[in-house]
Image (tube, rainbow, N blue to C red):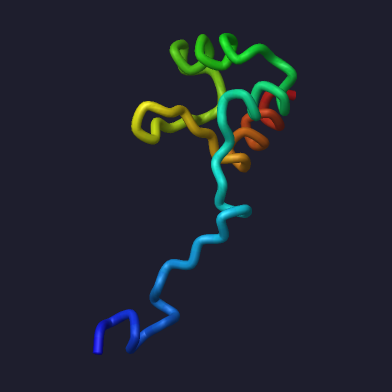
Length: 72
């Protein structure tokens, strides 16, 4: 028997909706700024945290919200 079958609670369960990452276009709409501004902020290190997934840029919604709240 494999570890996952012996200890089902040890398996990582991802919720595709809750754990979904935002695209730059979605962050742009949320923040009300143009997509190129997000890329400039990333280059300058002043925008919300983002990560590359292959060649695609993605944002954790909680990171974007936290960054937004810190700007006030």
